[in-house]
Each structure stands twice: as structure tokens, then as C-alpha cells.
Length: 133
Image 1 (cartoon, rainbow, N blue to C red):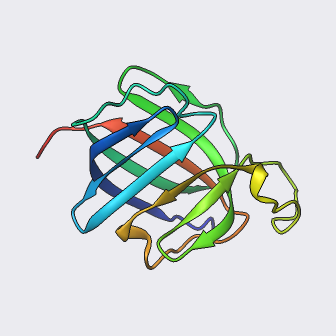
Image 2 (cartoon, rainbow, N blue to C red; image 1 turned 90 degrees about the vertical axis):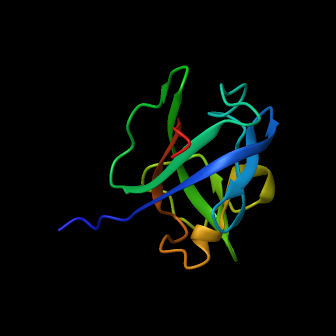
């Protein structure tokens, strides 16, 4: 049976970068960055977004619209409250090629202090504009 892991949290964006953003979650600051899929993203300061992190078994096509960005990445390094990411390559040893320049970005959040994901996991990241309530 396939393992299902999904973490969802909301963030109010307080600072937008060219490749992501920083914002307040209910329990602290979150940072979401990806220098490929979030490059020139549609999210702005003051937007409320919902972040879904979901363990995947197979890579699918990325999707981008005016209010949603879905993309797939691999975890290459864990942090105390999140992880650094890299491009997913099928059948790659998760501990091979862990040089920092291979990083695509990072995801940190107080919701990830008890991080259930592991190095090498394939994740689907969904960032979607959300309502305030």
C-alpha cells in the first residue's frame, strides 16, 4: 500500500521574492522558494496562500495558473523546520549529488518541525491563493 503523507498550512505573504515568498503562518514565519517553478510567480505581498506538501510516487507535469502553482521536487537536505529541494531524477540515489548549487530552493515552516518527509522523497508542492478564513 502506498504511503500517503500530506501537510497543509496557510501563509499570509509579507515579502515576495522573484522565486518565492516569506510569510506568516499561524505559528510563525514560513519561507517557500523554488528558482524554477516559482520564478516570476503570481503571488504578491498581502496574499493569503495555502501550501500543500504531498508525498508522490510518480512525477507528473507541473501546472501554473493565475492563482495556483503545482510542481514536483525532491528533498535533498533536511533542516530543523523544513528542507532544501532539488530537481527530481528517477532512480537517482538520494544521497548522490548533494552539492549546494544543485538546490532549487527551500521550504521552511513551523508546520515542518516534526517533518515526516525524508531525503530523496518526491513531493508535489501546491501553492494556491486562498480566502482569509
